[in-house]
Amino acid sequence: MSMTAFDTAITQARDLLRWRSPLRTELWAARLAAALEEAGEAEAFSRQAAEDGRLEARLAVAAMAALDRPAEDPVEGEGELPGWVRRMGRVTCDGAWYGKADPYGEQVLAVLAFRYENGKEPHIVVTGIDQPHGGLAVDALVEELKFLDDLGLREAEPGVVAGRILDAFELGDRLMGAEMAETLPAIRPLAVSRARSVPGLVRGGAPDGAKAAFQELPELPGAEEAFGKLTEFVGDRPLWWSPGRVRQFLTSWLPREAILSQEAIEAMPEVVRAWTRHCGDQPAVLRQIDEDAPRLPALMADDSLAGLGKRLAQQNLPD
Image (cartoon, rainbow, N blue to C red; front, side, top):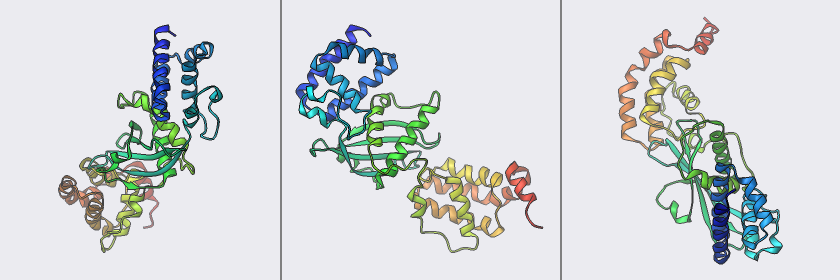
């Protein structure tokens, strides 16, 4: 790698040795690791730092290693570095929050709170997770706890939230050309490292509490059947409830996928309105229901709209 880039890293590491801040150093290491990966110079940097031998070079190596090691493992070469360096990566998760980033839940925020083993530099890692495109990570930042004051997020199980964060980053890795904030790559190594450090990780789409917390089901014939189809539609992204998603459910998904009794079809508009109230009672969503719900009986009766799975299931129904 170029000597200019290496010398810049050494100069920055020299400043960090004066700051004596594990968090500041880890954030710097995450940015450095992202830049080296993008440039294809990570291996060359590690080799040059090992050959250099200066304290600043050893700090850079130790800081990037701290992003990848389990919290209980020692930092490589920590005996040659100041005592504060050993705290890098050694954090305890103090809590977690999860909820909508916007009125329609098209992006959700997954938040984990941490403190170092000496109790200093408490911080939160916030990950923005896109919903319309499958639940991939699109942004992340590190902030103070007061950042949560006006967000209205609900407390959640840390292992579940950490699992969702890791799932979101892995999904983004599998999608070529996925859109994300320009700042995400520089925070990603730290966000992933923090999520991996949380005990009791739950991976693979843990159930969201929004459905379990729903208690406003209308007392109508067919309401439970209707709600069953609604929960099938929202799946593991129940916080995403926008006018467009309502229209998709009422005018496309139900006619194509769902086999419903007449009672369930008649109850569906009120079930959807109740779910909308549960999801924030957005006026635009309610207007969309008013526009599309009257068409539902005719759409459900139109066999030409049924998908293959529904047609096959209908053939197996008893006469």
